Image 1 (cartoon, each protein chain N blue to C red):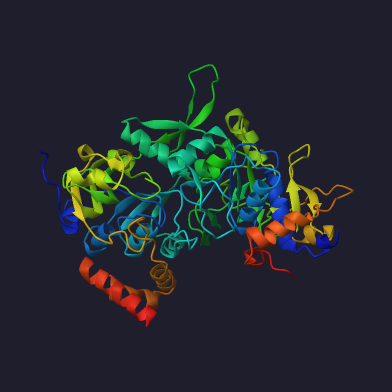
Image 2 (tube, each protein chain N blue to C red):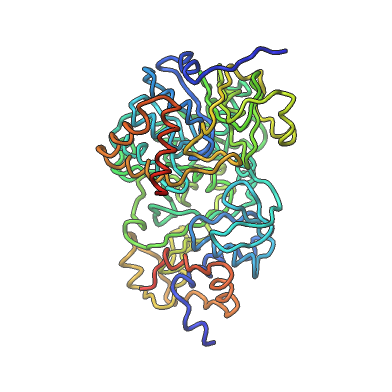
Length: 289
Length: 255
């Protein structure tokens, strides 16, 4: 029997250090490890480099001044095209930005997960990505074609945070939704990886809900497991729940106005995760009243 | 045909978008925006039945629902990592948006102003760099203006013909921008120097109107045809089957 890796979100954050490079799984406003992000917001950690298919994770961390550098291809809330905090922080010049193409990003994680320095890709040539990322290099094929391609650099991470539908206490993670996104790659590209999940189940029960191909993350790449029901809120975590569109609209609206944002933080983000979830419940009761 | 007289600008745009996927074969049609989404579905229901469509997330859909409605048939699975592989294989024709586009088809969705400290941060380059070098990439601009059709884009996200040529053979190998479609007309790059050309005007639009709304010298042939009329059956499919709620009119309002 492998060891029990269950811990709290606070314990996860306690293992992270300021200045670390942290990869965050999910995509846009989909299956983001928001409970872990909220724990990060409550911590003293700062100067983080955040690597993400960006959504409200990037927005919240940037708004809280936790971020020194962002590595991303975009930041979006999906049903709301632009992430307001991300945009405002970029316009203020709050963080250094490494802007990559989304396929280049995938190859960067893949290279890191394969312990390779880079992966060649036909993307970036002819764009201003090469100008704004002076460190990006091209590589010439050693074969007959001799093509000059971009060398997408490995995106090695100090830590990865991902949210899945189910996991066992040993760190085997299962997604039940339509898309794995790149959560397995994030874990494999990282020196340490933490999986939050809707429910921790016995290993013997993992295949009761779905087939073996849903077992996305292997325990060999996982250091901690956190049970955080509704832990992706307000992003989607299909099939357990959809995106909380009403709440996301309230988030985006507040994010566009400093005073409204202070009130939002006071109401939702000043306590622990239980307090947050209770405030969300109260928000919906008010909405439907 | 009496029905053609009543087609709205939005409906001409839908048909023009649909035409982008004519003869595409068994490839993924990836429309971004309401009008291109209706267009891709119209193409599939009429002259391009082999097209593959997604539900906007990871499912390939086997039926052709109305825009905004849920598909009832799933014919395949296309999570992001497979989607990106499909892009690299070129088995896809995407119609992206453009916050800015220039005469050679360089497109920007990243930011407005100086990249180092932008006046306005937009989405980010997303997949524009990989799309433009690997699969045919067309553009949809719902409101043609000098703010979008600019002399020079602030951040080259999608690669234009001049940038691809300057970047070399690995960039030009699979690079193709078949069309740019706006609420005023259809444009392509079928010119000796791959400069944007007015290919057709939507009925009701004049050449001067297009020139005024374009921030660079557009190539305008002596005879510019009109965008073709929707057929009666196409109008029926648009109005009754694909967009009964009239969402197209929100993206391209009737003046």
